[in-house]
Length: 544
Ligand SMILES: *[C@@H]1O[C@H](CO)[C@@H](O)[C@H](O)[C@H]1NC(C)=O
Ligand SMILES: *[C@@H]1O[C@H](CO)[C@@H](O)[C@H](O)[C@H]1NC(C)=O
Ligand SMILES: *[C@@H]1O[C@H](CO)[C@@H](O)[C@H](O)[C@H]1NC(C)=O
Ligand SMILES: *[C@@H]1O[C@H](CO)[C@@H](O)[C@H](O)[C@H]1NC(C)=O
Image (tube, rainbow, N blue to C red; front, side, top):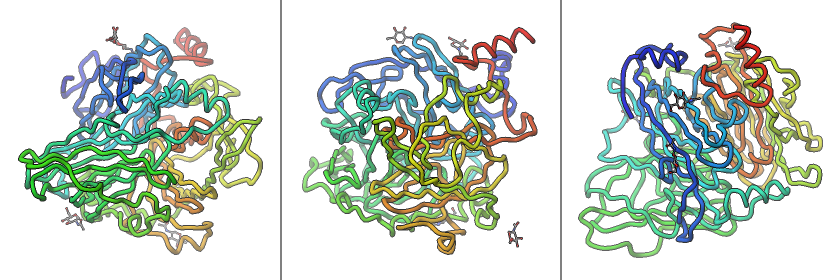
């Protein structure tokens, strides 16, 4: 992987779009995606590897870097990678979900040209199609601050990425068949940390030093709790927001979320358990890895530190204590508090309610009664080439309809530069986790029961964190303020992968009539074509 400054002529031809941003550095990666044997629980399974690795290679970047990744699909199925938390400003063409990109056919490749513009933080990438995530294919992605921008903590002595989540012994094709037959997934078989379930992985530290742990929940169906025996964790960053640096014994991490903590190796020199267990589940799954002091005088011992595993009450104190540090810098030199998100009037309220309807005798999952079904052509391409009949705007309501669930290719229309309030209402008795691509949002409120306009009185309009994935507790609501500052076709989805697969997602089409590169990049020259975009592409190419 190289590291150059200016755009070469070659790049100008192939990635002219990304080069518009000028002098920002480039990082190049070539990835080969293959099947390979993995042994998370000591038993051979077919995994999805990237360059022979599971988890895949770590991407370490700096704010504004261009990250160019040429992905070769050596699987026997179409494949795409998506980037949880990478904004892709003006560029939903790179988002790597089925609504924006044609799948990379087996034996072919596609080069993503991402830019981590104006962002910092800890994230991950994952395969977005066909339940491939159940076989791996994910990895960590971090965006460091530029050298001149102050970071509100001393540089740590080391940086560890923890990708933890529930795991199944069944293959992704077997799990997919269960869903296709109209059933929910069974309870997972265990949890893994960086691919390790039964054989603990070791993180080695020097006594007295401080380390950063970037922890993401990359699982399919369950929330997790993270804790380290005998050690406190200082929370420093949540999905790109520098937080108030509170101390925690354990942290809940819901599906698709990322947290970054500092841990000081300030205990007697021995080995300690790092414990991850499931949350909000009646049966609790637990896995450990090892925090090993280099001068360790003893192996791990004692009981695992207990976490809030069985207690299904939502940890209201922990949630309310996670707040932004208004005086710390984010990706820019000015303090995070300079963007007064609470002083801006919202222009629209969107209330999204989850449900689990049976449609045509099969289990489906829905938002405002609509259970998403993909079209035969990515929606973004359909929109660009003005292909009729793929979707209609307004095919999902701004409010729960209360009606029976139905299937639809749901797309919600929205105006660029609008400032929306989104209320997630969860009438079910399971915890939900939601992700919105291409945007960050301020989590202004969360409470038990039904949201009402009076709930706005309880909003945190001062120092809520801005993030991209948020939980909604059972029979509760969560409210967001979100600036629609990114033109494109953006996936709004459940991060519970069974629910996402069975329709609990839709696309938000953020539209600008300006038709200008300042608002949105044109289709990349290397875009893959499929479905009805094939013909359109040939028509336009022959016209030129
Ligand atoms: C990817 O890996 C497979 C298996 O090792 C190999 O056969 C293939 O040539 C590789 N492809 C690329 C583009 O490196
Ligand atoms: C596929 O990889 C080749 C280099 O091996 C590159 O020239 C080409 O642009 C890539 N294709 C796409 C669609 O990105
Ligand atoms: C907030 O950030 C500032 C600036 O880096 C730092 O001095 C301060 O200690 C932080 N406050 C908390 C409570 O984390
Ligand atoms: C927000 O709305 C209130 C009441 O309608 C109005 O007084 C205020 O000026 C508006 N604020 C902004 C920043 O537009």
